[in-house]
Length: 283
Ligand SMILES: O=C(CO)[C@@H](O)[C@H](O)COP(=O)(O)O
Image (cartoon, rainbow, N blue to C red; front, side):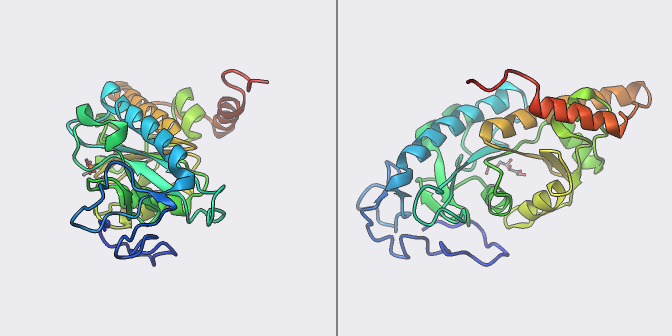
């Protein structure tokens, strides 16, 4: 079974051996999908539990399509950046505590032009490969850590968008000087700690920083933005907005000192945008 680099947190019930066990023995309650042909010389990943098959396939469609939004909004170059979405197992066995949840993410290093629903990989929330025939994104451990520690989060995005990353390189929060920032971020966009890629460090930094903030975006120092949302689309939107306001505030800085918005006004703008803006829910 493929696993991500070592995590610094004890594995949960699904552990490194995964639900299928170390031999990957066939389990009729799991569907292995096209990435795990029968008779593979290496132990195949355990496969998606049958009761999550439809939800995982729908998430693969969404996540593949949302990856195309990253180059479309000029948030990434080459293969940098990734989108994931949580598949909740709440309705199935072992789902109540979120431990049975899965995440769908792109394989590492795959060109955006080659991303399809079928190429997406599925991991558990310890980062173990559950379905797919490619190595998951190198940021999977960070995404998985966020899902384990922020149960309300359903989508995570990472980009290296130019202006947001420039603020991250300077380790300076983007100050809340625009109504759009108050709306979407509820204040400054905070900076998270420097963290090496490959274990839980990035995820830990994201969670520690965002728990102290209303912002769905954190600028990981010397790295770039990570964003969260109730689903992958919301996290992509936060990544687009993060880059837009990072660029506008940078331009404003070239002209002089931008003026902060009063906290009481930030609060009322945030409340209006989060609860009133747009169309009322369909009846
Ligand atoms: O931040 C990094 C590397 O600094 C990564 O996000 C890569 O830029 C994309 O990695 P894959 O998702 O292709 O593994």
